[in-house]
Amino acid sequence: MSSQTRPRRLSVTQIQSRKGGEKIVCLTAYTASVARHLDAQVDLLLVGDSLAMTVYGFDSTLPVTLDMMVAHGAAVVRATQHALITVDLPFGSYQESPEQDFRAAARVLAETGCTAVKLEGGEEMAETVAFLVRRGIPVMGHVGLTPQAVNALGGYRSRGHADAERDTIMRDGIAVAEAGAFSLVIEGTAESVARELTGAIAIPTIGIGGSAACDGQILVTDDMLGLFAEFTPKFVKRYRRLGEEIGGAAREYADEVRSGRFPAEEHTYRAPRRARSATAE
Ligand code: KIV
Image (cartoon, rainbow, N blue to C red; front, side):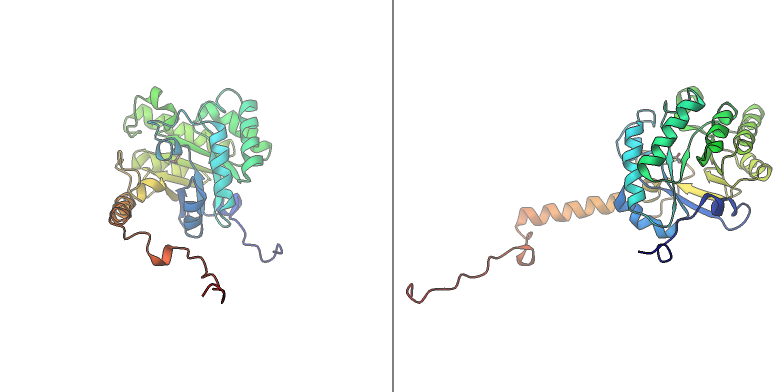
């Protein structure tokens, strides 16, 4: 395929140019089969470390490794052509120093073919964000409710209701934006704070429980499809109940196998009839 006919992925500059304009549509993706169905509908796919819970059944995002993110990131990149692919840096792979972060991010970019990485944190990560951006790595920031800090935050409660928390989230978002991030996820944060932060920074904000004031939205795909039903945060809208569909399909299959209705004639290989020899007749 020539470079003229090959479909082009959205770039970070195209995402940035949507600030205050057409809403940016994002979802998470972890596997080739699902990413293929999402690609044409969205602007950005995040290979989120939420895969710890949705794919691997852990009860937090903390156990995810860089190897896991690389494997899932590469699968999603291979299956897509349109959306900008961003891969989460997992807990422990980047917080130590800008150099540690650069090594992790460079590996993710080189081994997956994705365009950008996402990391959680505010003021304390600004120097690291700037370090990566100066070296050619696009970074998506993530403030507010940051799941990798669940132990320090004392749970998954929404944030920005008290003045001190509000000021922290504002300072965090501004620091990450000024450090050069191309976009900023605002998770589980009071509408007034998300609105003020969106107005205060020059890069697009992507809300997940950050209200309609954000420049775009992201949901965990398994949540919006009804595949992950362990708990449903207030900000999730369920567009389908695929978990129930899967259970129903498995029930039908089991009934048919047990009753002998599956496999049927059309699912069965028949060897071609042997030509009968005249002598045998
Ligand atoms: O890991 C993830 O899916 C995320 C989204 C919740 C933004 O970080």
